[in-house]
Length: 333
Image 1 (tube, helix red, strand yellow):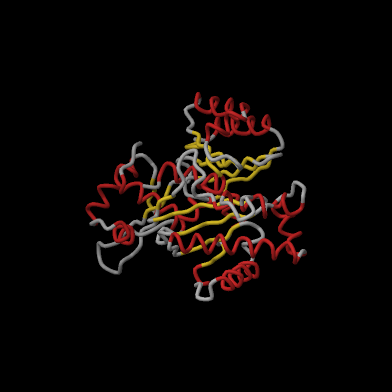
Image 2 (image 1 turned 45 degrees about the vertical axis):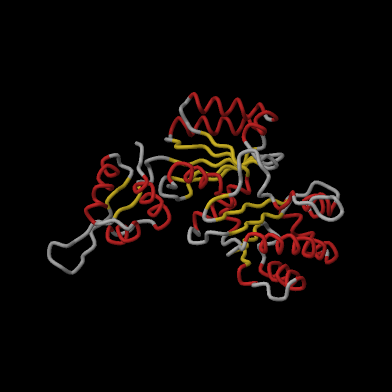
């Protein structure tokens, strides 16, 4: 069923809030009660929405049935593609976690997807990828995933390949739609970012224009080449391990804070940001967020440290980002 803009906003509200009264939904959407009924009826007919138990208003004949999403209408699958393995997360239509898995090879992943696609209605599979800014370049270098994409398309299951940091930015925006201008920084093991201005991502297909990690420093190296885990530890290091090593190495952590502080301050001055969101196992910790703010204030004492925050529930949202991206692709108006 093709949804109009109001119906998509309605689905998004219920996805975020769970079962909600009609009066609250009409108020949030800025529509009249008859207008809400007109949008809701086709969704009830298609079993996209379900009726909740009646809520008494205390007035005769005024009991109301709240609305909720039908969890079994369909499922969103996210696949987080890492260098040596893949993690999957399956959400039902109401946003509840169904299952998570880890696969060490593509054959296991393919068998899993084909298995659940034969028993569940997959609405979309969203693949989050590292080190690539667009789907075409990734698939050119990974023909195994190109084959998997074509298998899914033959089953009429939509697919989307998206940069993992872009997906995190989109997920943050889903939960904080009131924040229109923000920079999200994902640190570890590399360095990526997403910039939203006026509620819209600055990232363009195939472009690295919003990647703070690709900005050049005075020595001719990029920010990522200077403070990535590989640059710091001279070996391939996973996010959690690198965060622990940095926590124990004052010299290297100071290098990260001092180098990153200047780039964050430059971005804030250029873009007039309302929020700077720090993600990753290292920067999400409150003490490290506070330390970065102190380094920024050494450069500019009037910097507003209150605009810097760690991503709420980073570990949870990072695991779910692909499945949430699949929802966003279909239902964010």
